Image (tube, rainbow, N blue to C red; front, side, top):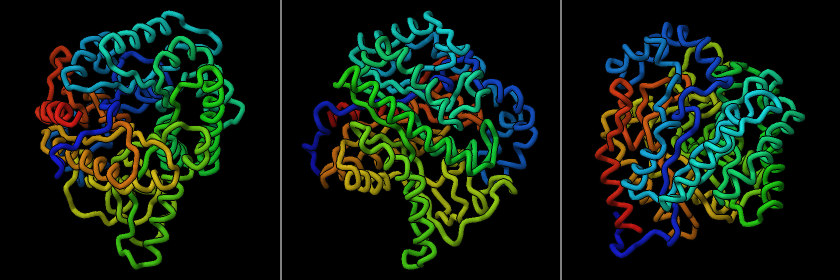
Length: 446
């Protein structure tokens, strides 16, 4: 992979994969599971109008996308029951770390009522990771909320951050301290974009004021949790997993394009990280997108179904409605333009801005035929190697995802897993060919 055949990634480098509780566990009850049941029929009925004209795999996934069961997480991939076997797969892949989530709604299903059995479950989960020599990286919030907390307005109200901090304090000794590595919140920018600016996720609003409130309150919550955890255990490594796009002007010398791309980078990539920069031990970020912007930002993005040439793409993690003019390909199965090597630009910018260790907390590709995943991973690792050679300090890489999982309002057809899961045949796990190649590459580079 490297021009230097003797190159090795740094000692202690975290080779990991990521999962999220709601997407893999099964049988969760939270604001997302309620929303799924309420909207599955609508999502199925509108699938062709929303997807057919631009999804590269539409003919293959049409029947699934038009079936309401696609949009219900249900038993998911039964990771809740099968986690020990899944950890064995992590070992087979030569990974040494797993990023996972704890489901707040399991631990505090009713306000102030704590489920000790749920806490004990996650204690055992963490212990089994450590027994296998795997580093647990705990994620405290990945978009799902207990129903009672959502009924209170969620993170719209500053006072509600007290409940989240209380939850973290309750589980800190049993679940957080044993992990050493902590991510407080996942992609707060995606959450406000999809839930409060585009209205595709619960609570399905187009309210820029509430979006700004949620964004800021999540930063406040992170800072409070950071102080709480570092006071309890100074050796903890605490950060966030924000989402960073490589936003570029389509016409590099055009002032409008440069302004729009620069604005997108500031609001999307840097605003949240700037608010927590003094309250993190590393900079965690997720990378999926490079976008080329041309022209001015559109008004009222709620007027149209999502379209790659007008208002973005299904599941695209960004609120900016400028006219994107990306190259025609390659595209992943979600229709996202793929430019994995440009993670290098993000790493270099982060290293320059924040002068802290960098952790790639998510990075992957929806690829049901496994035709791009090897290329994507190889380009990403080359970019990390190059960034470190130029002075960055990337300390880990977590691929999304370990398993095929429930992809929110897209449902079950996108396949991100290093490990394929056949939900129609007993949840059979199969390591993909790209993952076998990746496992050999990790051994070579470690």
